[in-house]
Length: 337
Image 1 (cartoon, helix red, strand yellow):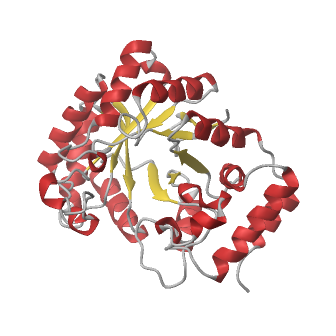
Image 2 (tube, rainbow, N blue to C red):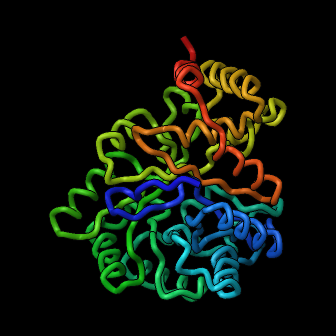
Image 3 (cartoon, one colour):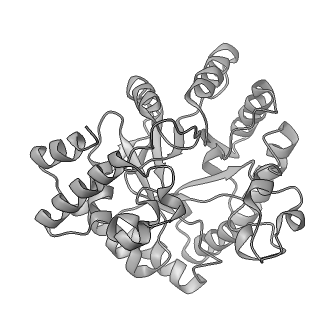
């Protein structure tokens, strides 16, 4: 597996990151361990989790399942020094019981209003709790999971600087954030000599979000341009295959993952992906991961989140797919006239 530099840190990370969100809940421990083992055996090192994963899978849970599972894997294998470990804070729910609806699932609109946020005390408590669950004295990358506009950036950045100085995190990152906010917080870091983010984790795929959509978590043209100009930030792309919709036309009908993308542009790009994938003899989902791996301006680190070992094997195979200049041109040119 190839590696890429994390921003301008000199740190080499796997170009394919392994998202562990569902491990310990949807994916049982034995299967989770198998997936991590196979990933590391293939040359992977970049594990991604968060303190809130996956509270919504178990009523009464406050999260932490994924971190605890990774902690058990690290303890059982002794491979902590081989792993670039990332976790996130700010998206825990203040009152979990209050956000569960009568149908058995959470009310996500209400849940989003209940995030604990990025206050200094919250972050200090969160990093210590994450380290306990992970069974380590530091993480390599610590993200603000959901941008918090209610807390002054100076307070958040000062707390993160303290966390880095203490050795509890080596680098910081941000997720689910607008470009203008990234620029503002980076200017504050420069002014106060605080550690600046080296990674931006956003939803990013081959499909482009539909025109007119206001969505702070999906990469748009402005953000791509910003990242191309600022190579001290690495783009970590979550949901790269949009819940697997590229492989299954029937699944796309009414699927929530398609809602931000649906329209003529998406149809044109889905058709192009299907055509190129057929020519190569691979699945469209694999093609999309490969396309992301081929991006250079900016460099993209796709973050896969397999539920099963078979899904992992399918995604991993994309690492070995080589796209020609002509195939890349076809994919890049596709879209609504």
